[in-house]
Image 1: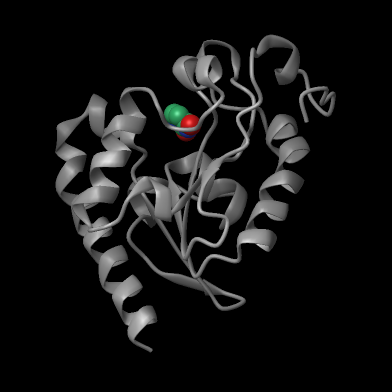
Image 2: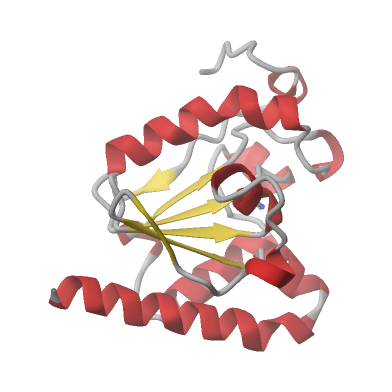
Length: 176
Ligand code: URA
């Protein structure tokens, strides 16, 4: 992937940020794309939004090591802009391969970009978050992107409800 030429993003990024975590994780988190710190380190969600995500994962009794964390695009869009539809489309085969290999039981979509390219093209996080969808035996739910929570504290109660719903679903699946 280091030599990827499927879209222009690779040329402007230092590192390809594929994902990290347990390759057999039951829960997978999908964000939008690497930011500045992720691009520096080659790891997903390690900047300010990532630190918040880590705390939220820990707040529901899990660790980063036991989940899997990936993004829609694997290379940082310049200035952290939203990936263009062609860029997302070019990179989606890698995300699909990750889902196929990891075979999570729960997929958590962080923000509108993740929802749009996995659930529905007209996905809107404010309208569509917090609702479970089952696809081929995988439970999917969207919530606010942690960057949105850093920008606007008012989203935090709903995001926390979503994380509690994730904890409940995970317990239910494990108990089944
Ligand atoms: N935001 C994302 O969507 N992904 C990251 O990896 C970091 C910040």
